[in-house]
Length: 638
Image (cartoon, rainbow, N blue to C red; front, top):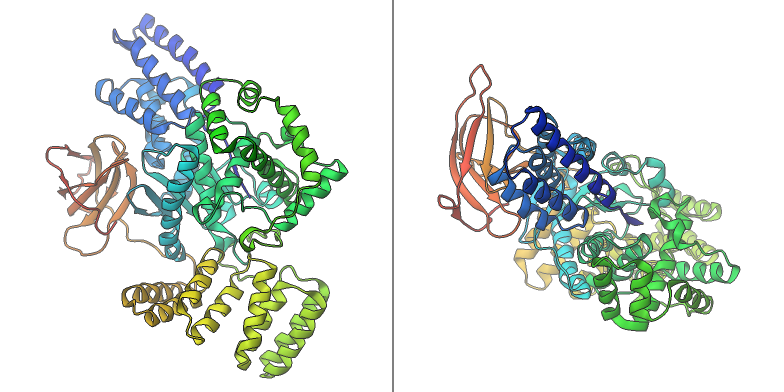
């Protein structure tokens, strides 16, 4: 499940305006600060920048912050705006540094309230690795999660292109995706509690201009993480297109409805089980009112309630799209972005009030046909979030008591080498339970016995029952490779990656399939992923190369470029400083480095620098990089 929160409320921005003006006047009267003649203009610009952040237009706020940094770098509201922009660009140490500087300069507390969020993110996320593409930045804890970065970037690129077209809006700056090793990390860097996450099944957010997604390693059997990434990017697109004026029911309905557009058509995102539950609730009069979904889906009481709420808003958007098409949706967002009220915007676009539309929709869902387009899932399993992502999955999770009894008996027979007896036990179990999980186990055992036909039947039966397990796809891929069908095998493995991409067999089989197709380069890439997963199996954490100690630098250049450094004597990859310009102090080993700055959009810039040892006084070496002296090169190795 997913949700979204507003970044900065408009009421808080309005309060900041009043306090800022009062503070500037008081400072001028007491002469505690020499207020410049154009102080009123600075306040106006800074407040406009904060309003743009609140409207999810961070790239526009960034432009104002850049100008104020150039013209009024020490003004308290300039510092506060820079802190806010840095937080929304995932530079947490820099955000904390500028919040502190703004506070010392006398900025009102109303513009510093996000400092706590910056401090939490700095504490939890500062050591993350970063990979940069033309339009995205992926941040992750070093280790296993690096394996899924290419698939994550592919998903993001396709989602931005296709979903952006639906809403006729795309972000201009690079967008940050963060992959968290556990739901505990998500709770630590958001306003969610651990109970919120367990009760609602929430494993991702879109807030502070970034996509915050829990790795599929942290959920038993994984989950549809690529659709989830697309879902969160859709929230960001909706927020930008509407200037963050969309109510929660509409936000979540649009994101849920559009999330599958990156890989197929929109409107494929709810299971048959969810559709049946929705129809039953409509007939019984137990639908969840849209008002209860505010302020977020994560505050609903259970995963069952959350699942029903998503089915409701999904089918309501389906109803709106069938009524006025995507142009109606775009028109609705445009009107909301212009300040039209929710009620007036809906009436203007659809010619009816929201209560009338709700009544028509609720009657419709009572008899809405159960759809299974393009083989979508029959069931929607409850997400079981693990306390630690490296905890092995319970292979029998979700089975009934009877199913567990059969499965354990089969496991004992298998362990004793009685493979045919284990297969027969599982066949009996599947006839009794019809469980896709039993069928998946049967496919594995049948393949081990050498009964390829039975293995394929069982794997396809498991997939027909649910798309939410990766194992049957892996087994099917092995069978297809055996049957000399490498293209079909790769298609099955693509499904497996979309649920649980940490099974090393996926990449070993992919290498075999690519070789069968004569694609040696992709086969080697798959082999590299296979080796990497096997090498990190013992633990989830791999310490990345650090910048060391012995000197301190601050990098000052055109604001908000991401900073990477590479030791001049090494051929290793770039090391992220996890900072944007102008940076907070960065600890580093003395020596020769290549500095690379990646701007919010456009090509990176590079420069050779020499870092001198710090003296006993702990002096800071300032590194500057002007556009004139920087060379614009391709982003190699980053």
